[in-house]
Length: 269
Image 1 (cartoon, helix red, strand yellow):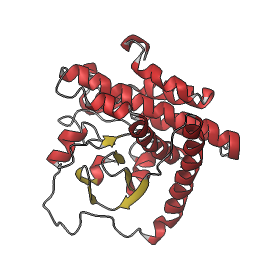
Image 2: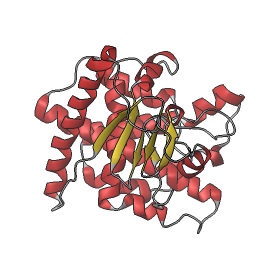
Image 3: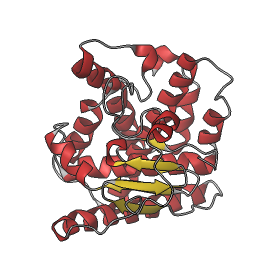
Image 4: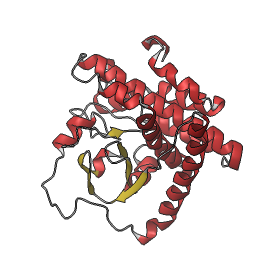
């Protein structure tokens, strides 16, 4: 990774690489280094979308446009400009400015090129493997990754990056948890304002998003994979934490409260 910037995995949480296939990023640096592909790999790039996936492609494009509208408005209120992230749809594997990744990485955001990467096959896995069905589960995933873009723009990502190598592994993991929970909160903030302006929510949508957040918390994934949990290894937060912060963002729509994720003691997350 020549840029020095790390990809941020996102919305649905991961568990330790040695335990289970990483979902949505895990430890981004270790993951991307492990999966580094040979230069010039012809498959390492965006691929053509299967025609059968066109409705899903259209759906994620609409969701991305909705996030742009909300974040333009909210950041403008803070006197900031919102640079629109680019969505890269790929199949199998892709080369980003943060390194080479495969579909096993899950959706991720690369701050070095300000792009969100998504293999559409992951959306099917949400329903089958992770038992989180529904369109709004997909919307939550995308909104979470866009939340990482917002963090990059306002400085929270740099706050965490500057601590790498300066704190213990357990402390670094805890900072990663706070960053991921904040992205969950920002996804909820987006949903709050999109509903306020466009009435996007239908019956069951909130439950779909909460189900996606809960289904893949670090604790649940570790329990499924190895029968026990190792809290110090958490990088994305527990199922209850993921759900709680998304719901709080949805209920309040208060961007200012995002800073609480880096102010509250660990016991109150």
